[in-house]
Image: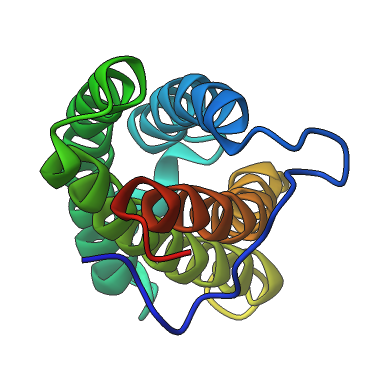
Length: 164
């Protein structure tokens, strides 16, 4: 079921009125973004982030990394399913799974980004050898974009169900 608490839009990015076309771009973006996020998680800018056990944020960072990695893989699979929904107008369960996994991915990207940036900001206290906050910044930007795109896709799912 789509999220009733999300705002509903008639346009995407204030330019296209066809939410179906916008959702095709959102699906393609989600495939690229989740693959990039997996790359960030598997090959971080600071490899010691997942190996430095002296840092108190090591365990939360490690746990969120694995949760986010699994969610990203599931989101890629659901993206293909949502693409089928967009092409055929059926299989609404894929669209709803895409919305749910996208929202979960966005939340865990925000958590991972905040943990990564906190590790970066407190690096002097724990001798954390990292001078590159790009991973945390990327995940926070992905959270913002995901949140908007989930609202757009949610509006389209309401249109598909005839409730909008």
